[in-house]
Image (cartoon, rainbow, N blue to C red; front, side, top):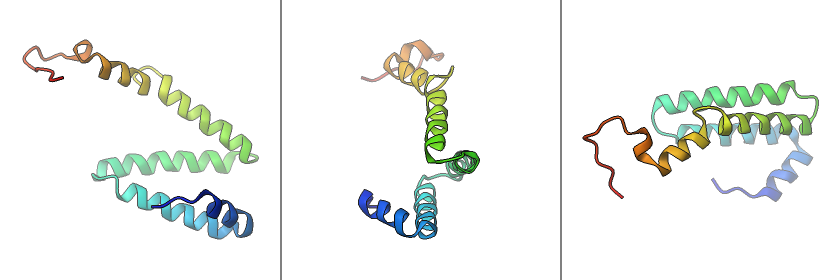
Length: 104
């Protein structure tokens, strides 16, 4: 999908309902292209959480702050994205199979 920020902004300002419909279609297209049904299910669950936080928020800024907090939690929590990157950088630190060879 081509993303044109100005078009999305204009649609949001002129027709919020059409913007929301187009946003949902774009999200569904992205999820559908994710591959396995398991991945799609996880992405739909995450999108549901995001949508609920947006609905609960008093305004757009509050929603942005909450979504940023959610993102940072996923990055920095134990076993989160940052830990995964560290393991990727040092594969021997999580290699439990001594017969498995790491190719660099």
